[in-house]
Length: 399
Image (cartoon, rainbow, N blue to C red; front, side, top):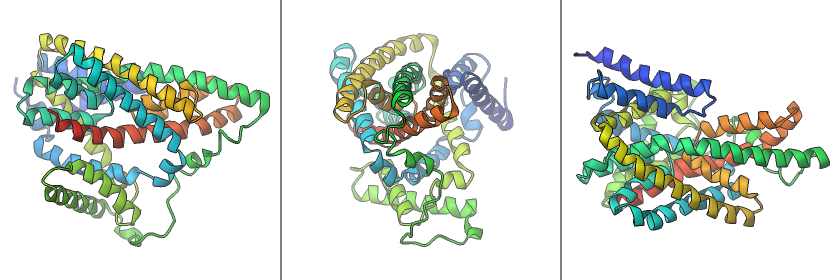
């Protein structure tokens, strides 16, 4: 059966929509990416054309533009002030995923070959960007048989992360509230709560480049400025002969140009383009499932599950040790590191749901949210948005 471009677009958006609905109904405990991936897979096995995603306009050229824009945008999300104030959560989360890398690259090598472990590890430490970088890198190296592995890892690992994170946060939330009920507010624990309360307030400090008048804050102007930064990042990467990955420079330049005032904070959100780009990027990632048959799917599930178990064990061991050293309980340290398995907005949703479930009053809920949420948000940003991109750029050279 032949489909035209509009019908292909409808199929793609329909699969993504169903995933979102299931995620909302289950309060994010069933990941939207998993549901959408299953639908794409079943569709490719039955009635959906293999090129449905490219026909829907989300082809290679779209993704090349999309990746650069999104990486610069991630830089505009980063508040250096928040990272500094929540440095303990950053250290625990980042060192936790170092424990993941150590276990997969040592014990994992006993069970699986080099390329399998290298391909699967970066998406285990992060999200969609890491998965796509590794998948495209494998295709460029001609290792097409493993190109689906990073995508499958990205789709699967959050199933382990959600229940573990919820369990850790419930134990930590009850501990915090028990202390609150017995002794009142603990000022040491809430010393950084102001970070959360001001997270949506515009940064009013003076910057090197003054902001444009409000009438010039149009989507076209914002997108133009973001792309200028992305092109500059590509130019600098070429100057290094590709030694520094273009997307790492995009991330760094996003931070720098936002700090000096050239870029707006949360640039693509203000341009109204972020959700569109993410939807297209997800669709492109799922297009990699078009070449996966039932037999191949069974084969890749074994290394995925084994490496996830090894990686989470390494994450737990390191985050527990480092967390205790920095004054976190083992549950809080592990939860911060586990944010690498799903990132935002799942870290926000799960933390709020847990805080609500363990609290008896609104005062208790607000108190425990002030303590847990800043750590989880900053931990997720440090792992998914920064560390996993850096790890991916390093691992691309190991293929």
